[in-house]
Length: 267
Image (cartoon, rainbow, N blue to C red; front, side):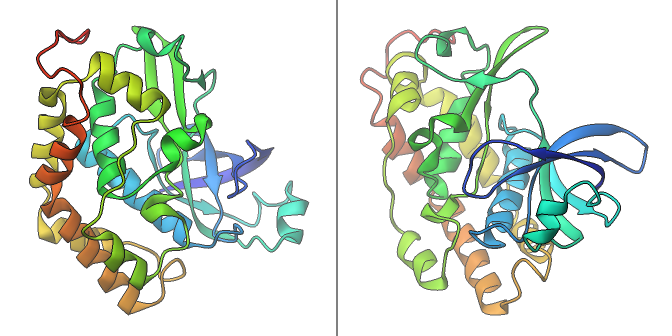
């Protein structure tokens, strides 16, 4: 867990009003973090969604910025009087690494990315857990020039399960459904770059997730973020059910590829 040591200021214009903090871990390593607060106007379930995405990002090796719990101390809030006035409390929130120097993905720069194959995993994740916001909001796909070339990053998983404020009834409704998304960058990736084989390794990674790992993931959600035990159980059942449908989800996606035998630019 990282601990925030200095408030820097707001970042972006998202509905969850993310904030920038300088944070450090137990080894003294520091980094700038984008923090979503439990008191954001969409509610603490947004933090639950982000935590789930961060863990799946690790399991599937997705191009999500590293993220997890971040402790906001009273000392770190001294420079954020507006946050205090808005009701922010010290405690456990969600933070991920701030990608300095990143820009938005466009049709012009998408082809430069050296990790376009990872977008197969991101698309699979988004369709497993009903995240329509990756292309609806053009600011949720970033590209950054790094040492070995341009890299894509997928950010902001607030709107899993179609929106931040999910309910038990909504999870039940979504368990057997899929809404295919081939807008903007996703359409370009499917048309020109991705093939079924690019999705296969991510399907196998989902299948490798054990039931006990999903149980532990749900149990790690802080009580303040999700106090209702019935909602926790419904969430676990949903995650389990969707992971069991990963082959079906992949087929739905790969059926959108216009020519599965075409030569990919990634080969």
